[in-house]
Each structure stands twice: as C-alpha cells, then as structure tokens.
Image (cartoon, rainbow, N blue to C red):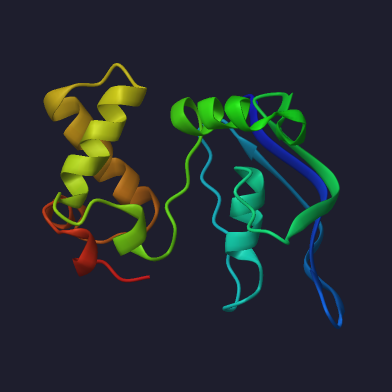
Length: 157
C-alpha cells in the first residue's frame, strides 16, 4: 500500500486580541491508499480545522504555524491557490458536517455519490452504484441501499 496522506507535526493557531489560540498542536497521522480514517472528538476539538488546513481552506486569521502536509508525496503547504484548486478539484475533497452546505439539496445522496465516483474512477452505472453502497457501509451508515435515496437534509451529523 502507498501513503496517500502524511501529516507530521501540524500545528494551527488563531491570533486574537487576547493572544494566540492553538486549534491543533503537533498533529501527526498517516493514511494509506484504500484506508479509511475518521477524526473523532468533541465539538470544537479542531477536527474541521485540521480538514480545512489539509485542503488549504483555513479561514483567516487562522494559520498553520508548523508541520508538514504531504498528499501523494507532494507538500501541500508549498502549493499556490491555483495549484490547490486543481488538487481539490481532481484529487482530494472534504464533506463538511453540515450536509446542507456540502451537498446539493435537490439531488439524492446516491446521485451525488455516483456522479463523483463516475468522474473519479472507471466505474459506471450499477458498478458505481454498488461502490457508493460500499462507501456508505465503510463509514458505518446502516441501510446503505435505502440511504442512497435520501436527500442531504435527511442525514444528520
């Protein structure tokens, strides 16, 4: 298996009038190709902040103060905005916790997953649909076949 994502010593901070707030400190993780990783923690623990930092969508005044983020062997921190747009458009993505801001509310979850699978892989039709079911099952979503027919507002958290 090859390393897909390798984060070493990632620290993220937000300057405030009262000083600097550390949103993440010395985070390291590795994800192999084909592996599934979930970030778990309380609300406000920094999970979304880490995700945003990985895809270079960290909101100002937040900033990465230290560490390395390598995706498929490339250092993402060195990429300019245009290069990161290409990475986000073609190779990496993130679905945020609020499905109403991440997914098209007029399309079923299944239609959106299948569309993405067909764009990103060689799978088409029934094979793409089956892969969508498998992906939902991998992340612990029960009744995956039925859930593909649901709309984003019918999913929670």
